[in-house]
Image (cartoon, rainbow, N blue to C red; front, side):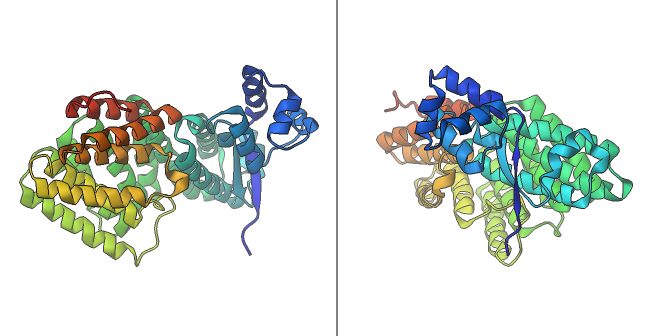
Amino acid sequence: MPPRATTIVDPRFAGELRHLREALGMSLRQLAAAVNHGKSLIHQLEAGQTKPTVEVAARLDDALQANGALAALVIDAPDGGDRLAYLTGRPRSVDRAAADALAGLLGGYRRLEDAVGSGPIIGPVRAHLGTMIDLLREAPHALQPWIIDVAGQWAQFAGWLSIARGEERIATAWNARALQWATEAGNTDLIATVLSFQGHQAELRNDLPSMIELSRASRRDEAVNAALRAYCAGQEARGLAMAGAASADVLARLSEASDLSAQSTEEPLSPWGYWYTPSFFAVQQGSVWRYLGAADSRANDRALALLTTGVAGVSEEASGAEWHGRNLVHLAVAQAQGGDAATARETLAAADAIALATASRELARQVAEAVHHLRLSAMP
C-alpha cells in the first residue's frame, strides 16, 4: 500500500493567487471557469479558507500563465507532513515522522524543479531551510543526527538552485553549509555530491584546476555510490578536455566513468540521484567529446551521436528544465562544429526559450556565449 500523503501549502499561496489573477484582469468567475471549478473555491483559496490540491494549483498555474509559481507553493509530502506547519513555530515538537516528512517534501521540490525550473521554488526552499535551522537548534538530542543529515540535503539543493540562478556567492555559502552538515552526519554520498557541485561552480567561473581537483576529490571514497562517482569522473574528464589536457588522460577518465555507470545499475541510487540515467550519462560523455571535437572531426561525430541520443531520452516532464537547456547548448556547439549552423541555431533557440521560461540568467549567459563563440547570426 503506498504511503499516505499530506498536502503542504506555503502561506504565501493565497496572496500570490490573488495577485496573479488581478494582474491579468481576471474576475473570480472567469478564473473559476478556466480551471473548471466553482467561483466559491477560488474565493476560499484567496481568503486562505481552504487548501488547494497539487492538481488545482497546477491548473491555476496554467490559467494564470504563472510558469510554476503557484505549483511550487503546494507540495505533497508523505504521511507526517501535516506536522510541518505546526513545527514551524514549535521546533521542539519535532519527531521522526516529521523529519521523514521534511525529507519527502524535499524530494517533491526536486521533481518540481525538473518541470518548472529553479525560479518558482527557490523562495519556498529557502523558507524551509529556515525551518531546518530552527530544528537544528531546538530538536531533541536523539534526533539531531537525522535532522543534520536532512538539513544538509536541503542546503545542497539550495546551493544547486542558486547556481542555476547565477547567484554565485549564495551558492557558495549554501554549499559550504551543506558540506559541513554532511560531514557531521557522516553522509559520504552527500559529501561527494557537494564537492562535485563545487566543481561545477568552478567550471562556470572557468576555474578549471579547481573543477578538476574537486571532481577528483568527490569520487575518492570508493564507498560512494557508483553512479555518483561516474558523474564525478565524467565531470573531471570534461575539465581535462576544456583545459587541453592530453587525450590519453581525458579518455582514461571517460573510460572510468563508463565502467562506473555500468556498475551503478546494480546499486540503489541516493534519494537525489534519480537523474543518473543512461540518457544523462550519454549527454555527459557527449559534452566531453564536444570539446575534443573542436579539433577532431571524428571526436565531434562521437559527441553528436551521444548528445543526440541523450537529449532525445529526456522525459517530457523534464524537457523544460534548466539543465536540459544546458545540454542543448552542448549539442548546438557540436552541431556547429560539424558544419550544421542552421540546426545549431534551432537548438540554441530551444535552449534560449527554456532560459526565458525559467528566468535562468545562467542558462541565458551560456546561450549568448555559445552564439558569440560560434559566430552564429540571429537565431530563428
